[in-house]
Image (cartoon, helix red, strand yellow):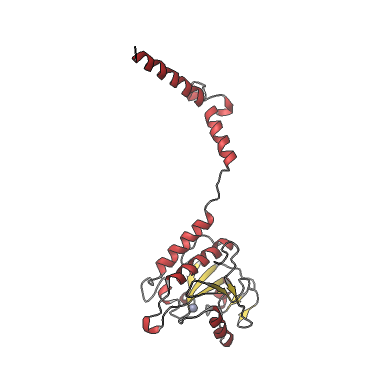
Length: 232
Ligand SMILES: [Zn+2]
């Protein structure tokens, strides 16, 4: 499992060329989704890009393993657009079949890629994953079919993996950002105590200046008397 909290990948093999050191004046603003148009491990992708003028920050393998090839602080040559490259963290998703199967992607790969994108959104404070905002597709910036069935718009309709990917990304973002109580336990107990005692401990005007505890005790005593009276 990769470390979501620190966005540390399962495996790192850094490109020695075909990326740009730093991000110039730009900062990370969104994640771009890609598919390999091939079945590829991180090592195989590394080999391909060392020979070709291309790169991405991450490779999601068929198993769901997350590989890092370019550090987030550097610019990957992924989107065919200089400005988009400088603002993006690019995630490649391996296919699990070829062109004859129309480039399928395994669910483990979809889930891992989506969770990784969510972790990046948390870490870089990009907000909840939302397509068109902090989640974009390669084809938004360049004349390409990439990321094929992952795309929000694949040949005029949502790609068949788009909804699943977005759902997992949003769920994972929610689970990572949940669990920070807005009121700490001691504060919550104090709040309950103050409610019972009334403003400044002087009881509630609605209860004739009595506290909730005193009022309940009074109600209890009256009921007690009534019940005893009914028994006679
Ligand atoms: Zn692409």
